[in-house]
Length: 318
Image (cartoon, rainbow, N blue to C red; front, side, top):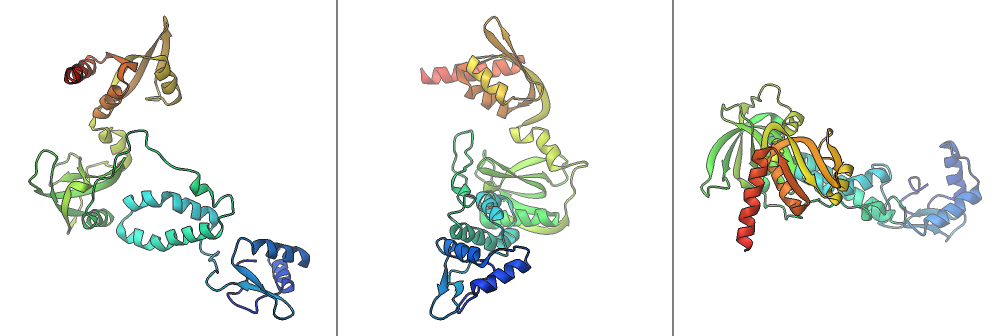
């Protein structure tokens, strides 16, 4: 009915709307239509033109809603993911979607009394780690990176590494754009070297698209790269991790395992954890975050490294 109502008076009568609904496969009585129109007028900007008989229903000026271009469920989804899409989509795609984002917000505002429309206000994503402020990213550089990925062409960049304040001029073969927490990274090879490296987008001061095609490493896919543990800042090697854990940590890991082959055994009132995991910095950061709730048994090189780090930290605090 809301789709059918005109933008101005004199409007459509309840009899006309009833006949139109029957044609659409909704046979209802005129009295039902009248009751529904009165109820809808409490939530939407529709009015009854009662200046002349028969009375006609229409939208108030500036209140008409677009019900044809986006469904309510789509509007909820777009509002929830807009912030994430903004970091991952190319500028051209994002520009095309901005009217949809606006339409989604208007849709929810117009249907704020509907339970689905209120869903976007009831759910949030919160990171399991410390909530870091995203780094400042040069929008032009990001747009160039995205466009190079779209066109499968090489990219010239001016890049500043964490260990040097002087930028380096590099030619990259861009392969994947990956958002890790608050920071976006570009996975790429450099010049003719086959190894894939990560480049933080916020450290790219300037980016220029070339007309030379990207030459990806044989068999490269984004999923394979992620499965290698590269985003955990480590190699592809896995290790058999063994550790003693507290009761609280054992319960947590039973619900959210470290790996599919994880095993937790109770031995004389203690809990022994065994799991195959990637040997990475991410693993060490997680181990350190558990504090006294975890004691590494093996591998020895990880146990020794954690011991030295904790020893140094204790000395610093002393």
